[in-house]
Image (cartoon, rainbow over all chains, first blue to last red; front, side, top):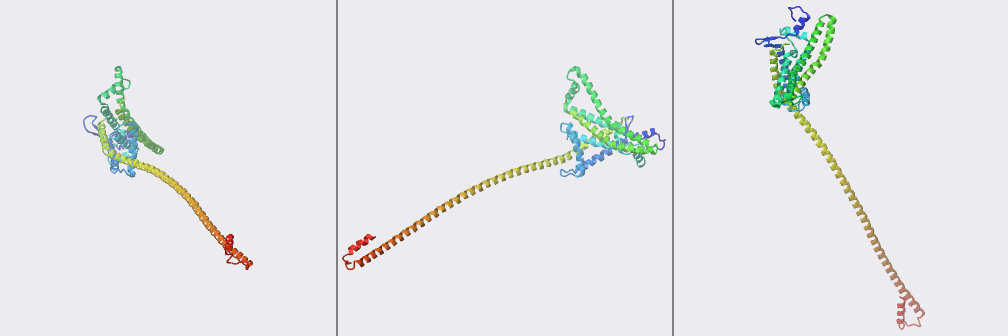
Length: 269
Length: 157
């Protein structure tokens, strides 16, 4: 917490929602959120490192408990992909879906960590005054994921259908081939192409950000006194338990939308 | 909520993680899973084959059993037939033997009767001759009437 300023609700929330920034160049764009990047990298390295360590020793015989756990996740995702994507999913789509699900789930799950205790640890153990724990409450993360997938979508559109096929799809669907409808078709498709990454990223961001805000509000309530602390603790626990569902569900939705978008890029109408 | 360089760095991190998963995580695990699936499928197929073979074997064994039973009953039938034949034959042989013995006995008896009759006749002739001789002692000369006596003896035969 900010020791030099007085603690007000505004300063409390501002404190928790301020990133640790680093200026990497001239201008407001060349700013790096160090906390977002470092946390997400650590989570990615831990989870994919764990999976890799298990997979490296994967045996086709009787699997160990850890291998069975990884296989469970992999087969769950593989099944979901199989139902949506009709092609050779093992080359790219299924591993990508696994990456997204695991990484987003891990980043979302940081929301469960008690914010003020974590803030205290960052402050006193690492000397970091501003450090946001949850990478997916940073809109940069969700946009980075959604835009990467958007570019993948464009790439597969061109790769599978060719320039001609894709242009034909942009101008001739969904209403028809009539030249009078070309403008309308294109407008319709452009709206779709703009809305896809927006809804994709903002859904995840909104859900997790809102969850974070609820935790902050409950934390503020806990600061009002004994009864506030009791209710704040009970509701905080309840919200955290409910949040386990949201965290998993949002990761799953994000993964499924990715698979659906990439499948749509593979299939011509 | 401001878009900045973090977006690019996160996209790069994301790409690296995707590359890592595509390259190092997915293929070996998929290979292991598919290999295991194949092993299980092979095992199930082998089980199915074994079951089928067992079925065939049991069918074959029941066929063999049926044939053996049939053979056995045929053999028993033949043996019974042969036994009755043997019985019939031995009956016939016994009957023939009996008949032969009876015939032999009859012949013996007839022979005995004949020889007894002969002896008796001889005896009667002698007695008759003796009686006649006694009666005709004086009147009949044995030598003179030898022919007559002989003819009487002939008649008595």
